[in-house]
Each structure stands twice: as C-alpha cells, then as structure tokens.
Amino acid sequence: MTSRILTLAAAGALSTLALPAFAQATASATADLNIRSGAGPAHEVVGMIPAGQEVEVSGCLEPATWCEVTHDGVTGWASGGYLTAIIDTTPVVIYESADAAGITTITYDPTLPDGTVTLNGALIAADTTGQGAQVEIDDGAITYLNDNPVEPIYLDGEVVLGAGLPETVTLTPVPESALAYANINGQAVLVAPETRRVAYIAR
Figure (cartoon, rainbow, N blue to C red):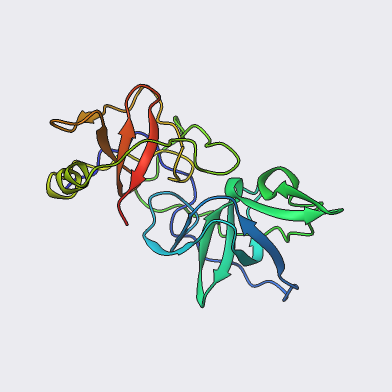
C-alpha cells in the first residue's frame, strides 16, 4: 500500500559517525512510548517503554527531538518530548533540557534517505501524563479499526495516548460509534473527533 505522506521527520535511516564512548544518562517515559528503528516517525516500531519506566539514553540529536535509548534489551530511538530526566530533584523534559540533563549530542551523517520531505505538520503534544483522552473504547470499534486499514499519514512527533491530530488529518468515522480512526506514523489509532485526540493505539 502506498503511503500518503503529509510530513516526515528529516531523520530517516541515518548512520552514526564514529564517536567516543560516553556514560549513559537515565530518563523516564511520561507515556507508553514507542521505540523505533530510526530517528523519525516513519521508522518501524521495535519496542515500547511503559509509562513511568526508566530507560538508558545514549544521546540525542540537536535539538533533542529524538534520542537513542535502550530499554528491556531493545535499543532504538524514542521521542525526546516524552522523556524526562531529574535535574536538581525536578523532572524536566529532555527535549527542552538535554544539556542540563547531561545528555550527549549525537552527530550523524547528513545524507537523507530517498523520499524524505520537508517537515510541514506535527502532532499536538499530549498532556504531561500522556493520558489526555479518557474515553470509553468498545470492542466493536477496535475490531473495525483492525479490519478496515487506511493509508498511513506521517506527522512529526510520536503517537501517544492524548496526542492531538491537526486539522489537516482526515478522520474516518467508525460505524455505530462516537469514535473515528486514522493511521498515524504507521499505527492505527482511534480518535475522539470532538477533541481530535488519540484515545486508543493498536499495538
């Protein structure tokens, strides 16, 4: 199935330049957070960090939109917007405070993969818990979501519960349900249409 790309993070399948070893930092996920095979929302999901659990951070891009992490034996990339580190006893979002948190900046080969396009749209951040859409999800809606796939739309940022979809994303209604659905960054999601926030993620 051909993907319809509204936007794509300008990361892609990039290879790391040779760097000296650095001590890893520790961070915590503020939501159930995907680990992807590369630094961008179009890369395959290879694992997940449950909300509240710690993860080792090897380093982040500049700015720290994506960080290389290891959790439960899986190494990949996670969104710096949903990772927090402790600075002076206070949790802070890595994306905003990578230097203060002692996070290493990772340097990459600037070559981008074919088909990478300029960033022009983004998910709306969820609340600080990542649980901004508390709605009832019925089994019928989940079954319909799984049985009726739609083409993926790629947006900057990560898919978490409570993340908001911009108006440019067309939502498909779920019959006999108050919910709608879409495929965002390769993941099927149920959405509360009145708020346009993600209420369920098929994993």
